[in-house]
Picture 1: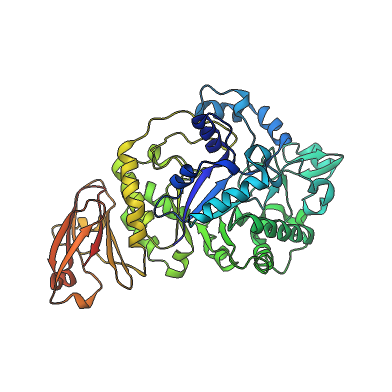
Picture 2: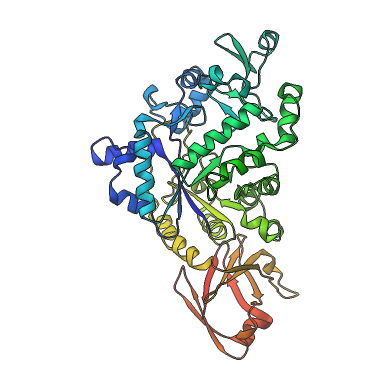
Length: 482
């Protein structure tokens, strides 16, 4: 299992500097802070936003009044000094000096490794800042335009040093004003991408690839048509990943992915892809919808990243009521695949901060939620061992509330666990037949790892008709069986 903890590096270091009364960079984060990051159950840290941000992109953001309004919504006492520019408008893949530079990152990676944690960093394959060196040194990496294009669609094209380039975009939205589009079909870009990712592999244990599906041949051709040039025989990611892994065979590739393209990206070389479908089902749909999703091929599921929030989504504490939040968290924490947690999620932060900002508002800590997560993470680490299996639930002719229950088991070499989640706001009763025939004829004790409550049952009963469950709305069991 891969369990990722995402940190907004710029904001985090700013708050550490305030807490410790001195400027804190990646190179001199206090040891006790790294100990806090290395919480039980986490094995990978994503330091989001470490690369040089673009002054040109910042200038564009400062002129964008709707964007500034979104900044003020998140941070009512906003000042211009709080606007740092987007970490996804990359000026260069060099760690920003204000964060500690390359040496600071190397020290941070060393501190994480000493605590058994891997480090992953961002890679933005689709676009670069308008002042990125490639615009002058490697212009064939980019999608080009003409003066007629610029005159006819000034929101879609930009002039830089006398050259016309397309602004970055995806096929469903207007162009982004602060970035320039890379050309996934360009041999020059593919070479440059291999070089860049190989360099990132020298500095980290993995990469999180922003909007990875935009570089797939079919998607890119749909977005750019003839402007992209001839359609390559090989897709972008298989070409790039194979060559990067020749240098870094164990480099973890994580894709931000949407549009049901997760399986295709896994086939193209990614270890894990965002599971946005599960996120949407947990927030907006019912148990039947989630159960259908969990019936997918297990190999596919192991390659997914389960999450309730990240820097692009609303905060879970704002999007989900308390009990539903806990039920959803138990779900994502105990499924096969990777899990992504977001710094501030455990404390109940509700304000989704635009990534352009270097400061966030003060918010009260939700002590009960923090206590819940402090129990959930080590419990999930104990549960997610061995073979996973989705379990059936059954009920009675006059009570079909079992349909609101989701259940699965984990079978390790020496461990057995059962997770049951009531995915509704009403009580649910049912029976869950357990998958271990050797329980027959012996007494069993089940211990809930989140409540410490114990249940003594006969093994025959657990096999048929099954473990009887009676859960209030949005409640869960995380059971260890001995």
